[in-house]
Image 1 (spheres, one colour):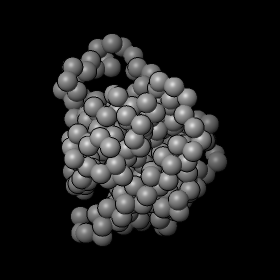
Image 2 (cartoon, rainbow, N blue to C red):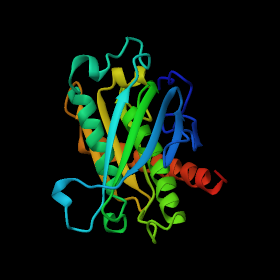
Image 3 (tube, rainbow, N blue to C red):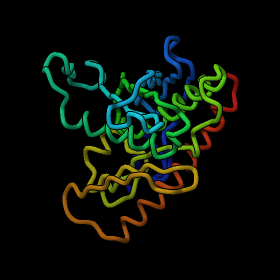
Image 4 (cartoon, helix red, strand yellow):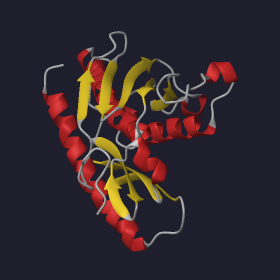
Length: 242
């Protein structure tokens, strides 16, 4: 069995640190660190909704995601320079929005939009999954703020939410891949799950050759255990005074 780059066990997640109220202007914000991956997640309320929801008495949650120029070994070119958002960024934005909507009763928000912004300041693998995990805390604090201000009456969040990457590297199933592991992965999977162990999204790709259903199930089991652990970190974070 090959030892992992950072000495972790195959099923061990990286150290997580979550700092709440990181940005003073946002309704909810966190700075999340998973290993060397570091992301600022904010939640901001806007008193309007997309046109397709007009008159339905429902709110909306949407997300934007970006990597700052110095977040990766090679400089990231800003979207405003190229004049367009690349496909990867667009896919991740939609994933974050879908994931958060999956644990929220949107009818309790009223006709308003919660904007989630995720800015990666350092990337070492798992940026989309860490964005989801961090954004959930930002969203929770945002909703709590709306309740305190008596803008809404009930907590619209129904379950905790977290995500993790898992993959096969050198024929070993590894949880929470760092960049170097991810770049060598034979299979790459991202799992989004709520605290009831219900799946919200599974993204799984064979990078080199097809993989078996047995390995798929094993990866899903490892991801489930890891997400349970991440949610415990979220709960401890929220139990502390912000």
